[in-house]
Image (cartoon, rainbow, N blue to C red):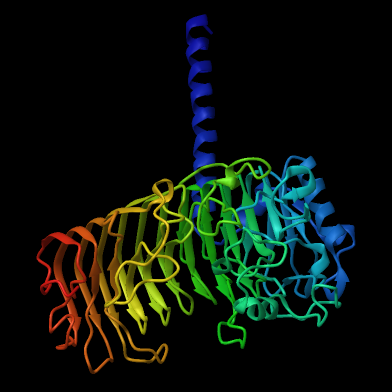
Length: 532
C-alpha cells in the first residue's frame, strides 16, 4: 500500500472516530436533558450501592455513614451513581455530594431526614456555605460552629445532582428527637418558625431580618457548583427552603416535584420550592410545586445591616468573615410548570446584586397568593430588568401581577410615600419588563379567594421604567369590581388589557387602572386623572 494512500486512510479513520465520540457525547447530553429515563445513564456510570456499606431501609437505622461512604468511594473511583432503591425508608443525617456523583432515589423509596436538630446549624442567604464564626475573633456575626446547613448539600462540585422518582423527606413537620435548651418542648422546625413570627429579632441572629423567617436548615443546597442536574424527585416536608441554588452555573432542574402542606396549622413557613441566588444559566422545566411560600424565588442576596442601625445596609456579607461573592442572578429560563399553593413566581426580595434576563412561559397557577411578583426595596435593591413573562394561566390567584419597590410593606392606595431611609447604594431600578398573554379567572374552584386587579408600584426617586402589558385578562369574583394600582411609573404600554368587572367607585372610577401619581409616558392605558 502506498504511503500517500495509508496517510489518508489514517486521517479518515481518526475523523470517523472523533465524530463517533462527539455523537455519543451529544446523545448523552440530550438524554440527560430529555426526561427521567435513567437506564442509559446507569449503563454508562458506575453504580455505588449504600446497602453494600450497611444501609438499611427500615425507617429506624441511621444510614448517614453508609450513604456518605458510598458517595465518597464513588467519587474516588471517578464518579458514578449512588442509588437508593427497593422501597423502604432510609433515615439519614446530613450528606454531601461530590463531583461527578449523582444521587438516585427510586420510588417508592424514601430518604428521610433525622429529627436530631443538633446535627445542623441554621442556613441563611447572607451566610457562606457551612459558615463557621466566632465573633470574639472576627468581631462580628453570629456564633456558628460550621455544621451542615442542609440535609443534602454540595460545594464546589462539577457534574453532580439528584435524579430518580423517589422521595426526599426533610422531617420539617416532625417533632424533634429530643428536647434541648433552645427547644425545650422538642417542637418541629415548622412549629418553631410559626412561634417566632411575633418576634422583632431572632436571638443570636440580630442581623437576620424577621421577614426572612426563623433561620433553619434547608433540604437541598448546591453552592458554587457547575453542570448540576436535578430531575424527577419529590422534595417534601422541608425544614425551610426545599432547593437552594447559590452561585451555581449551568443548572437543569427537570420534573422536580415539591410538596409542603400549606394547610398545616403552621402554614409550612418559608418552605420555598426553588430558590435561585446569584446563579447563571439556570433552566427550570416541568416543575410541580405546592408549598407554603414562594414556589420559585429569584434572588441575588442581602447587603447585611448593622443591628444597631436597623434598615441601613453595610454590605457586611461581602467582607470578612462572610466574604460572599457579589454576583447577580442572570439568564434564567422557567417553562411548562404548575404552581399550586404558595406565593407564586417571585423576583426578590433579596436583590442587592441584581436580577436580569429572565424568561418564563407556559406556567399554570392554581390558588397561589401571587402570580408573577417582583418584590424589592430601598434597603435591598439593584438592577432588576430584562424579563419576558408570557403565556400564564391563573385560577383563583389573589394578585396576578405584583411589582413593588416597597418591601416588606406596600403603601395603600391612599397612603403617601413611606418613611424609609433613602439609600443610593441599594436603590432598586426595575425596568424593561414585558408580560404577555396572561389570563386570570376566579371561579373559586382551586381556592376560595377573591382575585384583585394587581399593582405596579415604584418609588418616587426611582420609578418603574418601561413596562409592557400585552393581552392581559383578569376576571374577579369581586362583585364590586377591580382595578390595577399604578404609582411612580415612567413608560407603561398597554395592549388589550381587560379587567372584569371594573370598579365604578373612586379611585379608579370605572377605569382599568387607578392613578396614584408619578405616572408618565403611558401608551394605550385606561387611566383616570391622578387621585393623590
